[in-house]
Structure formats: structure tokens, C-alpha cells
Length: 159
Image (tube, rainbow, N blue to C red; front, top):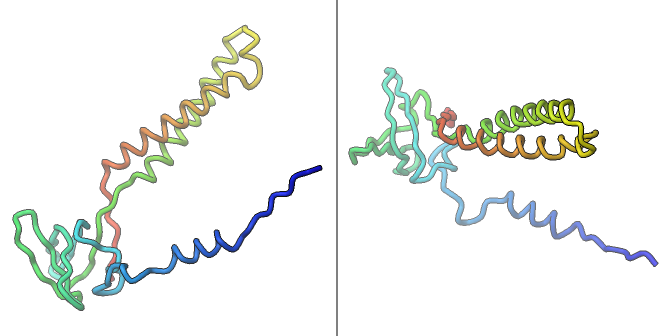
């Protein structure tokens, strides 16, 4: 007699909906696109005259923000004074994708080479590929993510 497994869709859907709704503890926005900035966010503000200020984000009030420099000084700016505002991120995802793709290609190449050179019975068909593809793809993904984490990426959040 086959065993029936009853699945319930309501709890996972409710969980996904709950995760997508910001709660009371969500960051308060001081302007459009600034809600996700926190005290550890590194920002770069470009002023209309072309000067740039880079430092940590400091919430000051409605329509204003602070840029705290490494020297300890905080510059308070009106959002209307800004030409652009960017937040620093990392290229971790891009590095992982590129590294994984290169690792996959390398694993395919080495699997093909091992299969062409080896005369043992284990080298027939998919044997070499079962080792080289996961090994090189995983290693390439990890190495690419580490290299990508060292590369800063600026994402414009205002205007």
C-alpha cells in the first residue's frame, strides 16, 4: 500500500508573505531609497559642484542625512543638495557566478582530457566528469566569491 504524504501549502506561503512585509523594527527612511541604509553603510554623496563626500551614514532627520568621515567629523546635508547618493556593496555574487562558470568549463575540459588519456574501466563515460565538474565548479565558485568580496561596488540609491 503506497504511503501518502500530505503537503500543506498555506504555512510556506504565509511565511513568504510575512518575510516580505516590513515590521515595526524596520529601518525608518529619511528619504526615497534611504530606508535600507544603516549606521555601518558606507555612502558617497556627490554635491552639485562636483565634490564628493565619502563616509558612514548617519541618520539626522527628515530630508537630511549625515556623512561621518573617518576623522570623526559629520557633515549634514539636505537631500535637495545632493546630485547623487551611492552606497557601497561588494561584487561577491558576480564573482561567484564568473568563478563557477570558469570552474565548470575547466571541469569539463579536465574530465574530457582524463577520459581521453585514461585506459582504465573507471575512465569510461561519465566517471571523470563526476569528479572534475563538482570539484572545479565548487572551487571556482568559492574562489570567485572571495575575489568578488574584495571588489567594492557602488549602487546609486538617490535620486
